[in-house]
Amino acid sequence: MNKGIKIATIGGGSSYTPELVEGFIKRYDEFPVSELWLVDIEAGREKLKIVGNLAKRMIKKAGLPIDVHLTLDRKEALKDADFVTTQFRVGILDARAKDESIPLKYNVLGQETNGPGGLFKGLRTIPVILDICKDMEALCPDAWLINFTNPAGMVTEAVLRHSNIKKVIGLCNVPIGMEMGIANLLDVEHSRIRIDFAGLNHMVYGLDVYLDGGSVKDEVIEKLSDPENSSFVKNIDGMGWEPEFMEALGLITCPYHMYYYKSGEMLEKAKISAKEEGTRAEVVQQLEKELFELYKDENLDIKPPQLEERGGAYYSDAAVRLITSIYNDKRDIQPVNTMNRGAIASLPHGSAIETSCVITKDGPIPLAFGDLPVAVRGLVQQIKSFERIAAEAAVEGDYKKAVLALTINPLTPSDKVAKEIAEEMMEAHKEHLPQFFQAVK
Image 1 (cartoon, one colour):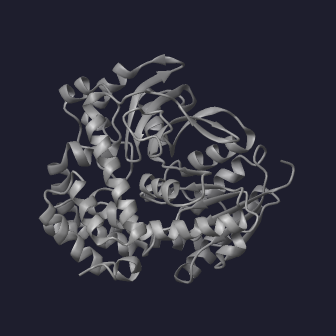
Image 2 (image 1 turned 180 degrees about the vertical axis):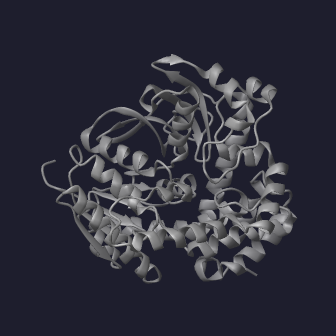
C-alpha cells in the first residue's frame, strides 16, 4: 500500500476521539494516515466541531500531513475509506441513564452493557451498525470495520450474522486494561506481559499470564485475591475476591465478572450510587461537560489527562495497535472480537468471541484454546445465547425475542420481571426503537 490511508470515524464527536488521534500521531511512521474523516449526526454537530478543532491542533503540533474533515454526511466520509471505526451511542448519554436507572426499580442491576441495559443498548445500536454496513458495501467494500461501540460482542455478532461485511473486528479496552493492570501489579513494563484471553466481550477470562514468556498466573491470582487489586477499569469499583474462589477458579477474571459472581453486592452498590451521586451515565455527563470545556481551549493541543477518568483509558493503544498490525501484516498477538471458527470448542463456529488472535493483513486468526474450563463454560454459553437472541430481536423487531433474551440473561430473576422491564424500557426508548413498534402489544 503506497497511497495515504483514509480513516472514517463514525461518532467522531465523541469525547474519546482525542485518544484515537493521539494513537494515529504516535504511530504515523508505520501507519501514514492522510485523511481522517470525523462523522456525527445533527445532534452532535457542536461536539464534532469542538473535538475536530482539537484534533486539528494536535496534528498541527505534531507537524504531520493529516487532513481532518468534519462532516454530518456519513456517505461522504465512507467513500473509498480504508478503515472505518465506530464509536457512537444511539440516544446519547440520556439513553444510557435510562438503561441504568429503570432496571433498578425492579431490583435488577442497571448497567451499560450487562443485563437489561446491555440488551437495550444493543437493540438501539444494531440497526444503525447494519445500515453502516450497507453503506460500506457500496462505498468502501474493501475497508475494515473496527467497532468500539458497546455492547461490542453483541454488535460484532450481529454484523457477522446479519450483514455481508466479513472484515469486521470488535474491540474493547478491557483486555488491554487487564494487561496494563497486571503489569503494574508486577511492577514491570507492559511489553513484557502477555495474557491468553478467551471468552466473550465483558465476559473474557485470562487462561494464563506470561512474563517474558514464562507463566506467572499463580502469582497474579494471589495478588488479585487482595481487595486493593481487584479492578482494572475506572468505572467499576472492585470489592475483592475471596481467595478460595480465585484459587479454585484458576483463571484471571475481568472486572465485569463482578456483575455475575457478586450480583447482589453490585446491585446494592448501584442502588446506593444512583441515590447518592446518580447513575454512571449522570456522572459521565458531568465528566464530559468538563472535558468539552477543556477541549474548547484554543491553546490545548494534546489529549488532556482528565480523559482517562471517562473510562476509555488505552483506547488509542488498542485501536491503533490493531489497525497498524493489519496494515503492516505484523502477525503479533492481540485480544479482539472476531468469528470463532472453532477456536473455542464450547461456542458455535460462526459466533463472535473475544480471544487472543494473530493479527494479519487478512485479519485476526484466533488462537485455538479448545473447550473453556468447565467452571466458566456454562456462564459463557449462557451469555452467548443472550447475545444471539438479542441480535435477532434487534434485526427482526421481535418484542417476544427481546423478552426471551432478557429472561435468558443471568442478571434477570424471572420471565415476569423480564417482561415488566422490557415493557417500560421499550416505551422509554421508543424514539430509537422504530423496528419494534408494530410488534409491541
